[in-house]
Length: 235
Image 1 (cartoon, rainbow, N blue to C red):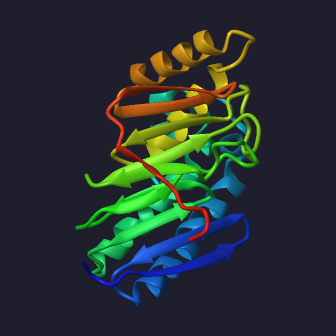
Image 2 (cartoon, one colour):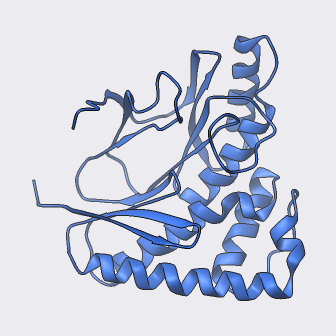
């Protein structure tokens, strides 16, 4: 098992934790975050609709980050900003791999993009909910994107009430957009029915491999999800 290094970085609203097998990977990640954020900010200045839309918009040819956000959002039928954290994580991982990292894991505001040649454990965070950070997932198949939407703890917009709607895809951008779409439909006093509705929604989105929903203290899963592990919160 190789030595892995972990570090965190913040730039405006972007709060990233990076895991890599190469210390220089942190510099690559920081440079990538700054570049892609700047590209997106400049684009939004010319198209405020992209920032505020709650439905899919036409994908621009450039910059790449806006193009990928719009495509992921179209697949999940949500607004493009629903994919911003996941797409940024994907792009940072890609830049790290291109520069020579073998392990590149980027957690950006709770959304995870990962490429690794060994297993990576991640915790599910759901604010102050009882199950938050008590369990997680052992990632063994890569690339993988993991994203969670919540109607209770997240700063991101959600029209639902789920404690957590976690989505697994090949890429974090789609997982991010899909988690928003799924979270939006989980509401109502019949928790079991709402969970089923959310899982059905998740598996109807092309590219979603699996989903886990927590609502009203109940848990439901669909599709293929990584091995669930217990998290030692004392670590």
